[in-house]
Length: 144
Image (cartoon, rainbow, N blue to C red; front, side):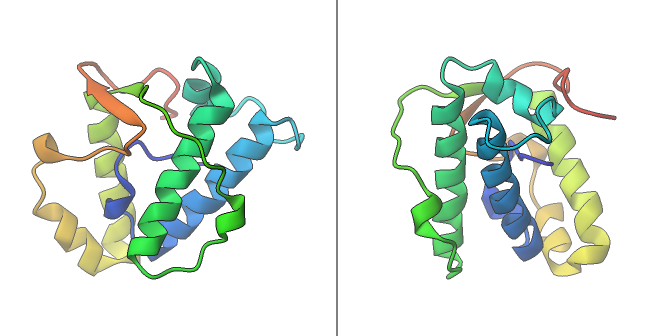
């Protein structure tokens, strides 16, 4: 499971479809509708938030909006309409780690997207709209 902190605009088609599915799975875990993935480290930032279900639903909504921009047909009925003026913190180290991790995946899977991302200065990276960036290293929950 990978719930990217970086903005979904950076994901290729496979990555966006995967994060949509994984976001829905994460919600099912947080709603206690599945037995698997209960202790997955990617869920910790949601579990540790003031309202885990609200934030995972905001996350899913952000993925859905990116899908609309690309002309995809993700199921709108799976999007729960939440609003919030609060955001979750993510460290710059985590954002940078994810960006490099994504580029490594895209080298072989989607070379054109890889070359598009190569031109982006890591200091200019956008994050998913539910996050704000704070100084710090890779998050403790990150594997590897």
